[in-house]
Length: 492
Image 1 (cartoon, helix red, strand yellow):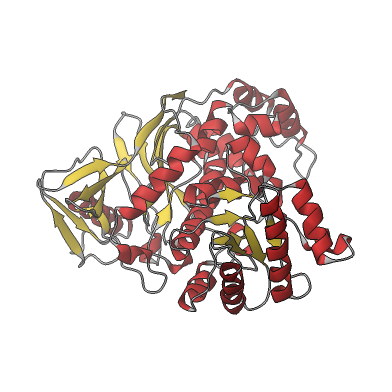
Image 2 (cartoon, one colour):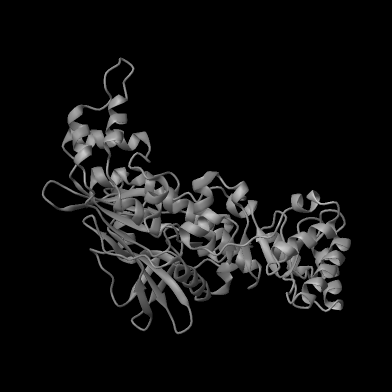
């Protein structure tokens, strides 16, 4: 199913920043529109001060690319744009060029669910520079947010230690599209289900939910509300117990559970949504077990995140299922991944590649040149390091990687180490050659990936830094280009 097209039923080619169209116009005017280029999409720091990131959003990128075309309505809007003197921003011949434009770019990408790290290209785009430039903003939009949320979800699920996490954030999410992206990415990151029914329909994600305080307040008593709910949903009874007095609410839930048993049903559990969740869950567990409801689960919500869940675990909380909303769907402690899209190679007039990089006073912001690939090495147990290398320079049996920020930090891999290259072909000259796995397979893959790394990268405080570096030849090429750009290569 083409989800973006199904949701919006319109062209999304104008989902871009205006300066992308301004540059496209400039490329066209200067005769450079068809110059072959390579761009890399990557991020500079793991989010949440963590040790890893989960790649997500590629399926939506594929949907977007399959429908990349400027419609007559798009062209009409661009025609309506005026300069301050009343003249048209874009001349008619350029608009005709856009109308006829068919994307012929080749895109290689790291599959969704893969654990990735700073400076590694998540996508590599190769094609006419006018096209590759127009793709910058939508690709960043689709990859940045979902990768951020998938990572946050993975952290929350790590803190729950295998107990189910339910994504309950629809009402606090950033709009309709934001809520759908959140639900998809959260499921990839490890959440067991979502409360978002539209996301369940669109993305085939399991949906879960109980009832709200308003349900209980509608009736004259808490017990009456439980009875009415049990009559309506006898197979799905999780009672919210903290509307008035939590301990009394648990006792009422037990009474209702006994009535359900008489009817041949079983109460699934109770939900706590306020108060001291550690204390209340411990006391609730005692009451439930004493009454013979050892199998009833205790659900908890209330502005949870990975740090609060970990604290509750440390306090001995008896919670079995975690409902996480606001702090997951808003990526509360880091609202953006910070991914970037940089030109890394350009063909000159004679057909030779010229490698490009962006300089900065900050070492972390100096981009990497080349037609980049990522090779992941492993031993018999775990992944042990990644090499970012240039496909034209290649990589030998023995590989030395150099930290892109600290050149004194190096690691050597030999022919004894197993490896795989992470970027795989997704589009070849505009034609899709990759079939995205169904979402359940992506979720399972992400969980397998996390198990394949040293557990230190999953620490929330001072996580282990997984070795990622530039292959030595690429590092030397980059250093040479930096010195040349700064006019220092003749002064050594």
